Image (cartoon, rainbow over all chains, first blue to last red; front, top):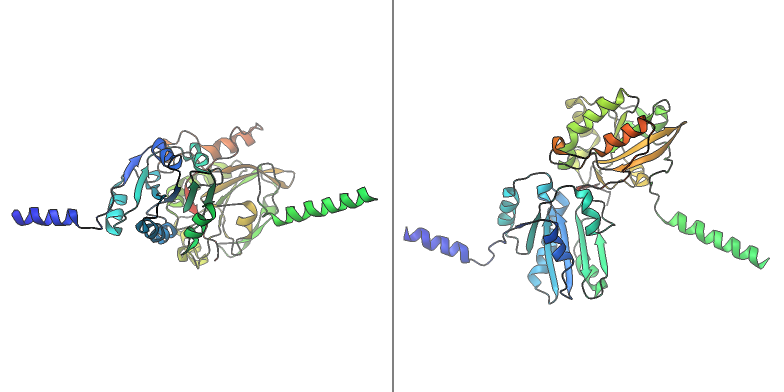
Length: 158
Length: 202
């Protein structure tokens, strides 16, 4: 028994323990998009079933790990659009040990909120929105990002 | 004379700008008559449908989970509207290099396995998808036949619930086609949905 408690404690406090994805409605996502942080907000839209999304996730994780001042990263999973059970996302986040902030958007009727994210977005995944919260300037990309592109887009907004 | 020159210069500038921007159809635009290869090896042209009321064009593929979720609904649309002179045509534009499950061979076997009663065309060059401005799968363009020329009447999603068609309370494509068949205005001509981005060639 004591062994079990110790092992649980070790597992829980091991650095690299994954984030817990938080289920949110539109308001929760909008709070991120309209955060008055004054910094740079990076919002990536993905799903576990989207191969190019999964491929580009390490780029966001790397940026997150760098902990750049004023740069905040949020990964928004749209898995609930197809599957009401969040378990698959939880397991994925756990397995990949994702460290960035993760939201699971639980909203019906995508046609009512896709334009609110950005009118340029068709709804295709992957998609990434980068906002300079000080100037309000935005970059929106609807494709898989490659090494260096994220940094370049952020630099263009700074 | 000076004025004439400035008009010419202005026109040249406008023409230049127009040709620079990528072609992309909007609602009301007339589409060019594409010809693509079907899964039976034969060529299918939009011109073949000159006697129909219109065509439901669906940019689709084998692999996308959203397409899979909508597969039965797409087959049902074909059954329902094919008999009403409003046939469905599916087009796969995904690059097989980027998405091997969407190769021509895989399309042929998918169409056989699912007993598609509609053409499933391959857009190898991706030119048709580009000219339509298709972005994701499934992405629908409802075309109205106006004496042999096809005008875009609706662009977007099939309905407003990818997860469960029976729970969708807005059936966009059905509503649009029903309106066209009844000679009425389409209330919602553009919608968006979460989908898989089309796998463009690198």
